[in-house]
Length: 249
Ligand SMILES: NC(=O)c1ccc[n+]([C@@H]2O[C@H](COP(=O)([O-])OP(=O)(O)OC[C@H]3O[C@@H](n4cnc5c(N)ncnc54)[C@H](OP(=O)(O)O)[C@@H]3O)[C@@H](O)[C@H]2O)c1
Image (cartoon, rainbow, N blue to C red; front, top):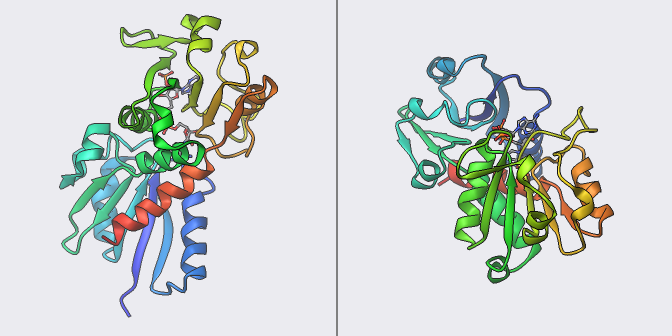
């Protein structure tokens, strides 16, 4: 039986959701010829060496800080990943060639569809907090769902708002709030983005990409105003399944 290895690259890597998810999946589904491991590489330039050292590697998940810096190392880039400008899944073919994809998009689309049918989304306006790798996938997905959106950053640029620009009028107009920064993530659970939470109401829907803890401070504050808030778990599971589909396609 030929063994296939899958894994995660990033740095530093603490507890890995992906390793637990795929190890459990392989056990539950009787997939005995596959295993999953973590590869904390301190520099992305070590990727080619890692591929050579592990000839049974068939696929990798890519996490912070390499979702963008991995792109020059690829032999091909899926059009959706090219549009987003970030890669979080690598497929390694039998010749050791690397093909880049983005499964965060599919994960986020699954989250939106778990909340409302697709035709309801184009009536909403969104604020996307953070402009990193995940935010880029979220923005592409919002465009495809017809959602009008603005990105919010700590840095002032012509096409994005800063936290100081967001008053109660902006919050009243934008009822979909998507949190794509690491604030509130374990162990820094007492932090959240600085917005006027008391301007929110029951019409607001918040999606936090953070999934640990299950309820972040951001989610708690939205719910206190009567709004709806979900964490990043649906996205996490859906992006992992999309990665599995890519590796097996
Ligand atoms: N649920 C899932 O499946 C899933 C998938 C991907 C990511 N995530 C989670 O989403 C979060 C963001 O991931 P990412 O890959 O986009 O990270 P990232 O590339 O590091 O970007 C995060 C962005 O957040 C903003 N930011 C960083 N530190 C901040 C601070 N102290 N205060 C305010 N804003 C800050 C920055 O935007 P500005 O410089 O523009 O302010 C930065 O570009 C992480 O918690 C990650 O675990 C979850």
